Image 1 (cartoon, rainbow, N blue to C red):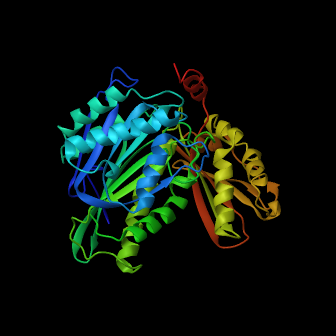
Image 2: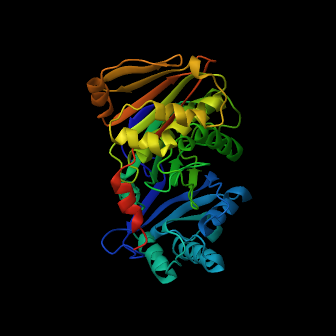
Image 3: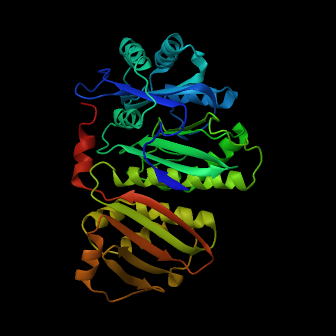
Length: 407
């Protein structure tokens, strides 16, 4: 597997476009389209929040129906959540506009929205945006990058990646883009994520691979503990790489799943590090837990704790906060078995060992915690399982951003 340039347009046959639809933002692009003329098998994971946006319900129906997918249209600024029938009708109007312009069935077009909850989308601006983008689709890497920027809300950087790998003698490409900076505590996948590949694979296996990979990538990040109403991760595979179709869980399937994991892990870490107001990526790595699920729960509890996140921001080696978060996670363990370390590119510092605090150099600990990524390594000494979770520090700016988000 190799990293390559681009994102959602890196794979053969995928085009993208963006435009300024002025849905909420007045000074930037706020709509994006990703499209394949060749029909794609598709898979998806969606929010576990009972309150689901209209676009989530629209996309779930496409994925679960077994139909192919030709593309996805995304708007930023307004989430189209808590909008009733009018919100669902906006999804229909968007897809129908694509049908008219691109000559594909409307029910093969996914839609996604992100932004303020409880506002109705301006359908006239949506459909105008679809017509604009349909006429300007390009299969260039730059078009994919522009699309990744158009779906941003409070994100400070766009998030995209592409990789290549070999399947049955053919070079296959997998690309992706995501957005998400606040209201990030997935229980399925991510805020919004879109993956494209020219791999030939059966739909059932595509869905199984995506669902498995999500567990240890997007489901292991948290910014603020809020699971969005709009969480959507979609993958489209158009088969243009020409590989022998993957129809069983063989070596080719595992190769694809490895590439999928790396792409999703990269995007998940990018989202965590770009949390609203964040200055650092906060990583918790749990080792030697009794079960894999125990390791996941413990790691997520540590990076989700507001007190832990505040300590990371303040470069305060207050290890009791991390142990406390472990203790209320719901996992049963013996604190007298635990070792806890602070790590970063500046070094390593052990602060807790087998139930007892250790003397440590506060100046060294502060230096370690001042780096762009701070890792809390926790050895449970109870088994052989491990897991990693990613979050960010909690800063004053997080409150400022969200105190007036609607306005």
